[in-house]
Length: 218
Length: 253
Figure 1 (cartoon, rainbow over the protein chains, first blue to last red):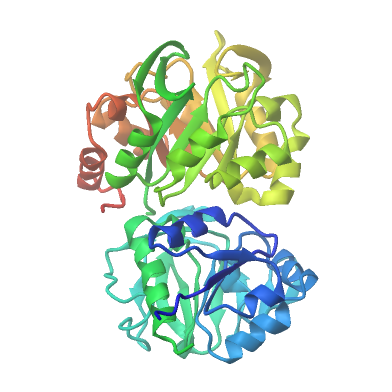
Figure 2 (figure 1 turned 180 degrees about the horizontal axis):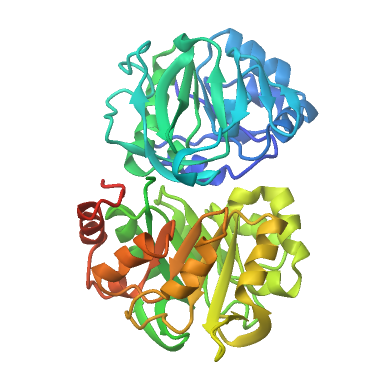
């Protein structure tokens, strides 16, 4: 019997999950949206979505008693995809309206964009390119078969600053400032942009993530 | 320079996409599901979907129709029309929207903006402004699909809404809408001159040159376009190639 993979999208009260559900459906996967630990436990792949503030995100996870389980599953190298706020809270701490503890799955912090060239507006709202970091190849990752002309959709005021360059999978430049747009540690990924809103190119990330989950022994 | 977004706009009445000329004289132009999919596939950067009679009739937009339109579209979609509560916003988001445009109810009860921003974040809440030029050269805010005068002055209203937390401004020039006579550059300049949040220009897109002007002269962050795409005067690709040829950054797919 072919094992049917179970993708779980964590609903922790921040943001709109429906476009994500549709994106998985596009590839024939009925993703499960849950806020319960007992459902999360059965996941073969986990998506941590979210928009909003760092503190609200962590509070949302905490209220539902999800923090320990997510950290435990990350420790087991379970395929995980954080999107926007979901990627940010994977880091150690967030500097948004104070300093707040994150999941600390990857060491680093989340900070506000610095003052930008040409008075570019913050938040960054719109499409931008991603380019490879020196440290990591995209082969076999969620960015497999991406090119540097491919553009993805960003909406954010805060940026990812992983401590080690080893955890940088992609970089993006906005208003003259280059920041980390995808973090990676083993099977754990976090994208600052929204793959589910990035057209065909973004769907490729969802597809690559599904393939990554399929390759994992269950 | 950042990318300029090109955003086709669908005005919805009943089950059809319509195109108003200066908010009156509606013409039916097509099926929303087909048009949205076509624009998505042709390289639209986002979509705007506005039920233009919901507020006027004090009813909600059609959630089932919206669901069917958004089903296979994977770019951001801003939806507006008759939004009057947090519950409405939830329903619209659950029907596939990413951002919410609010005009009429925000004017009636400005605190609704901050309530919505608190619940969904600034990035989700777009202030939709319908502006009409007064005899003295200032602009007045209209509501209910351009039918009702409010007495509010546009610039002051936008400043207030930004303080209340809106994440973007969608500004329509009622005088220019549907005329293909070029954007109201004067109006746009006034807004982009101070706005810390992105300004999406609507109303008057005509020649390719008129699109360029709105970006270069009036500093719009994004262009909302309907007539010239609906009537196939230009394709999205043609618009983007032209802009790229004029050193304006756009996303080419």
